[in-house]
Image 1 (tube, helix red, strand yellow):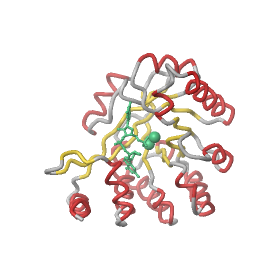
Image 2 (cartoon, protein in one colour):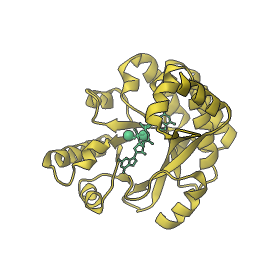
Image 3 (cartoon, rainbow, N blue to C red):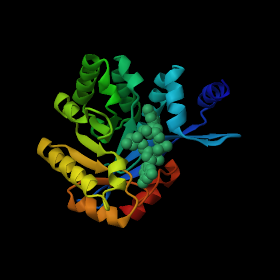
Image 4 (cartoon, protein in one colour):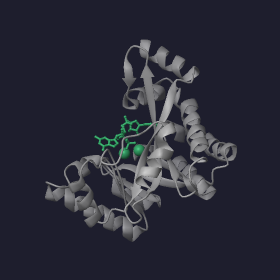
Length: 250
Ligand code: G
Ligand code: G
Ligand code: MN
Ligand code: NA
């Protein structure tokens, strides 16, 4: 398949980039973290979404190498940011099929000199769906290194709640489908409130994803979310723009 060959070539030629989207702590009003998001500008197709090429990379067995590159690159960049600012990296379920993930994380931290506390790893519940025992032991080892673990896209799967009992996540990222409706739909608002309060009881931070308007932001603050992320503040930006953005948002 053409796209498969192009993806392999793009990776080999170092044409994939990481962009960084700020996450704002509502207590301090400052950027606490940047989420690293893959970007690929194809010569003729233009921008190809990671929603399209990440599943392809998983299918063709490229995700292990690509995931390792993402970890190294994200840690290398974050090591140049101010100390209080962390970086969040998305992990694919495929990366959890082997213990090698642990040594990749250790290698990325060592090579960059980034403190483990400044690295957050985002996983979706798909990761916990299969190979649960292996996954849990990997998560525990990662936690022992000192990195933080976030549950991404929370609320979209069919047993999200049970996973909060299986593993003590540091953070819950509330899926943007709930945030989209939080202003005009009482049920979405009630769900966001319940997740925030549950997070607080369990000692987990709660990040609202996909915040696009001031109305949403104010509602989320009232409902007790601890962090917000979305186009209202900024889309993911090129690495060269990170420091300027920190100057603007704080
Ligand atoms: O940035 P965007 O909304 O287009 O991302 C689409 C999807 O691709 C999201 O689910 C996001 O988590 C995923 N994604 C982006 N970058 C990475 C990455 O570095 N690794 C993995 N595994 N997924 C990523
Ligand atoms: O699954 P994950 O949460 O990692 O995916 C992040 C995706 O969400 C990225 O593709 C990113 O571009 C997208 N995104 C980030 N902020 C917003 C937003 O405010 N609105 C919408 N619609 N998408 C967003
Ligand atoms: Mn994510
Ligand atoms: Na998400």
